[in-house]
Amino acid sequence: MARDPTSTPSRREHKRAPTPPPRHRRDAIDATPPPRHPQRNRNTQVKWRGKPVFIRHRTPDEIASSEAVSLDELRDPETDASRVESSEWLVVMGICTHLGCVPIANAGDYGGWFCPCHGSHYDVSGRIRKGPAPLNLEIPPYKFTGDANLLVG
Ligand code: FES
Image 1 (cartoon, rainbow, N blue to C red):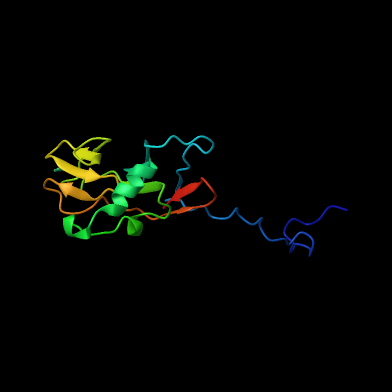
Image 2 (cartoon, rainbow, N blue to C red):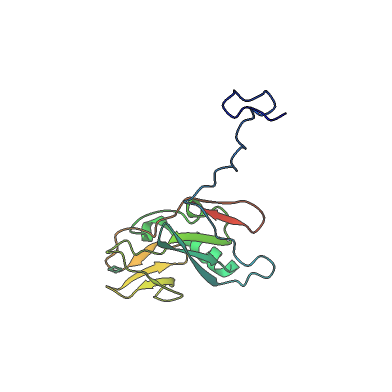
């Protein structure tokens, strides 16, 4: 027997709408670097919220030299350990803290980044070492979601 379309739905028909999939964080990106054979001293650039993010897989020498820097030498004093979740990986915003240019990787007097706009030099911890930039490269929010998986945002 056909059901009257104007009647109230039966108990069986009165189901909730399907549950929507878990809401994805629209401002987070999977920035997972190549997992199996990560090349040391390798820079990867991704975009987060329309801005560049640099991910650097640091060598043991780079880690040691970053950790050895005295805070007295730094314009914006931050220890290397306070800037990384895992010492092998440095994750920084790719925006010069002077006037916002995008620095060049593996360049400058400290082997980190060099901003060609007005000559700021950053070390391999993204800390400002020379030039007009007042602050270290900013650290975006990120977390490791697996051994080699990185989520920015
Ligand atoms: Fe980088 Fe001026 S914007 S040094």
